[in-house]
Image 1 (cartoon, rainbow, N blue to C red):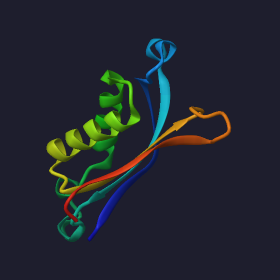
Image 2 (image 1 turned 30 degrees about the vertical axis):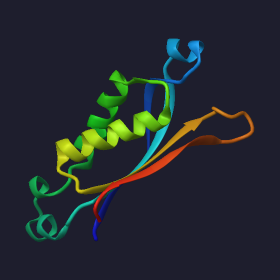
Image 3 (image 1 turned 30 degrees about the horizontal axis):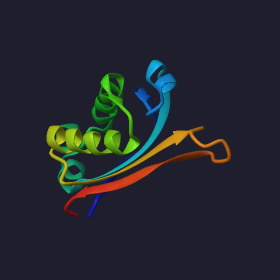
Image 4 (image 1 turned 60 degrees about the vertical axis):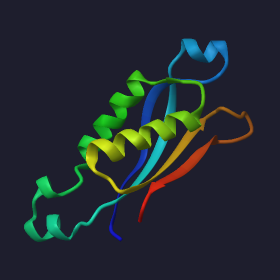
Amino acid sequence: MDKVFIERLEVDTVIGAYDWEREIRQCLCLDLVFAWDNRAPAAADDLAKALDYAKVAERVQAFAGQARFQLVETFAERLAEVLMQEFGITWLRVKLTKPGAVAAARGVGVEIERGCR
């Protein structure tokens, strides 16, 4: 299986269960991996046949800009649904890190996989 990835994509969003978190935007760091057959795009050297990671990154930024979730789990789940539907992705992995959420840790978060490999 071929994979396309986006590593350490930073997005700002409203995320958190506490009242003070609902009034600010916080940074999330995303690592995204997508199943994508790269043979056809490589053979034709054609971006139209490839998974355009610039467009995917733009969509993730737009999603984060509108999101208002309490849980990082919800953010990850909804983002996975959007990306799979809009880009025709059959399998993906989303690793979402919320830096600074626990003082003694660099970050906390979730990692999910959805779809079929």
